[in-house]
Length: 178
Image 1: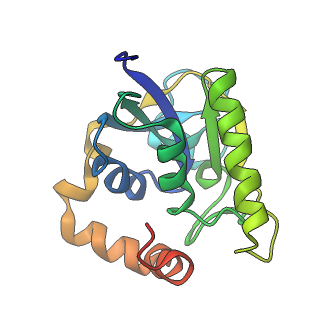
Image 2: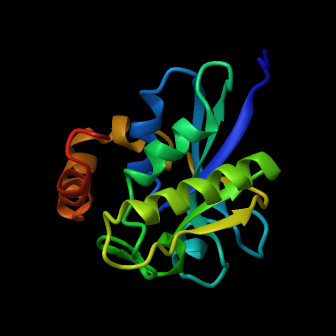
């Protein structure tokens, strides 16, 4: 049995909204909000949000595959996003808020592609699934004030998640299946 810690990186729009759903899963050891997929080193939040660095907001998850599989993490990921939106997520618009799965090896790539195909075949969405599946690139942790934002600023976070349209979308499309 493999007890090594593995990594997964998911871009799902605002990274604040991507931490909570994963931290509830046994086997997830850490979740870091950050930036990946771009062409500059150590970007700041302001640079990423300017949509000039090519980076997206993402979460890097360290997990124990003996306790939680990459496929289980993918299932959580798909239920947090609108995979049909090429321009961002909910109220957050622009390249830095687009969705992607970043893979570290052939197994993750194959699992991600298979899960995307399965989602397409479910017919849940009338528009095409546009979430990218891309090789992992350097991941840069976001500034400290972004880490665990949903816990540090619970009221603001809950208002943001509801006001952005994410909560309603998730409930409408997944109900209690999240």
